[in-house]
Amino acid sequence: MGVQLAKQAIDLGIITTNGEAMLAFYRDVLGFRYLREMPMPGGAGVMHQMLCGDSMIKLVVFPSVPAPAAPGGIGGGAGYRYWTMTVTNIEEMVKACADAGHKIAMPVRDLRPGVRIAMVEDPDGNWVEFLALG
Image (tube, rainbow, N blue to C red; front, side):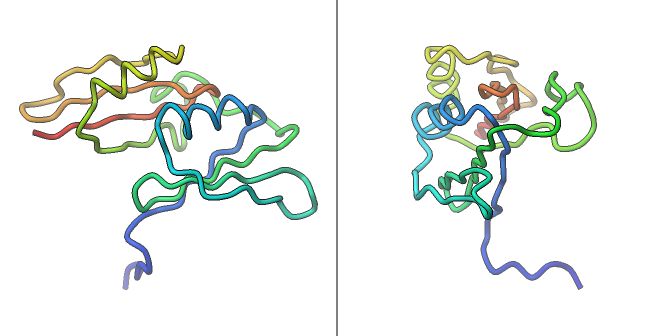
C-alpha cells in the first residue's frame, strides 16, 4: 500500500539564515500568499508559512545553521536540488526574478515540443524551476 494523501499537495521546508531576502523572493517576487509567522520550538528561530497553490512553503529562519547547502544547482551535489512550479506566465516570472536582481540559472528554453522550462536562484542559491506546458 502506498501513501494515502490527506492533501493533494506537499509542504516544502526551506532552511535559511537569510530570512529577509528569502521572504522577499518567495512572498514579493514570486507572489506566494503569506499565511503566518510562527516561532520555532525552543525559540531557536521562526517559520514563515506561504502558499503556492495548495502546497505550503515553510521558510524556516535560524540565526545559524550547521552547514549551508552545496551551491551549483542540479549538478552541485546530491539530494534535493530544485523544485518545480507549472506556470502559465513563464516569461513574466523569469523577468520579475531578473528585475529583482535574482540570478537566472537557465533562461526560458524549449525542452521538447509544447514544454518550456527556466530556472532561477533564490537568495540562498536554491534553484526554482518554472515549467510551461502548451
